[in-house]
Image (cartoon, rainbow, N blue to C red; front, side):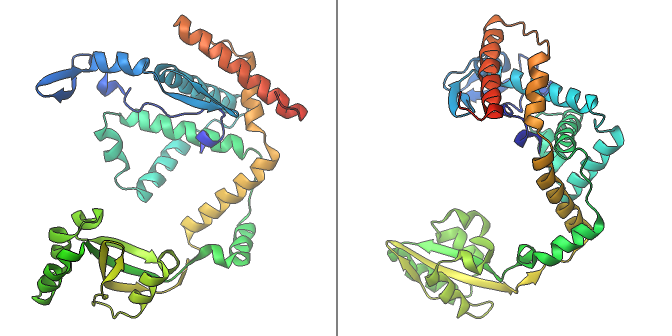
Length: 324
């Protein structure tokens, strides 16, 4: 959430976690030649051809500088939240963390497998939660408002009819081999793994549950005229020939107003109103302008001063309704 609030926010490097700071650690091996972390970090810090958009302009900036600027911005977000009395408490951070784990059971494993630590994940949660609280500062949404929004916007909470599909994509010369295997009773998924040219072959041709509106007319007509458990005729598109297996049809469904959906609606309404009431970008600009930031790398310090000067000029121009 926070990365949509601050002007500069660019998450450049997730590989600076404490678990990866050993300079002798091998990060890759090329034909027997090792690339070690010391070389990797040094090159990454000053890698050319990388940058970010500042207002309506793109500036080439070293990744090391972008990472440092990200860290500075995160500190300023937390300081602004502290100044306004809405800095997330430890219990709030933990509650948000538990909610995220419930929605994504692989969150921690995916985060730590890349060398990042659990404290770093909790810090990331804290920064994003602080950004949300700044954006929605002073906003309260009642249960009745949540229910009213749900009732007045039924299309937003209706999942359309979906087809659960697998696919085999081949050229004309391979069609007969596929048909012979299927006729012999070989499972569709195995045939897809053996013959399909499509990327889905690694998962046995699994496409998943696809909304009817996302299928082109030819495929939609073919699938809609196929019984569950059966395959379509071959559908030809240039040199590609596709055959679909219809595994199931999931009917249109209205999402129930459960606790999760209530929380999602509440957040949406809070952000909508916060966008009108709170100008976090200006608050960040004001804080950045009066903050004392001492960057030890002279090159990065000069870059930061120039970038901040450009940014503040653009923010001033926005406030005055003029172009910089």
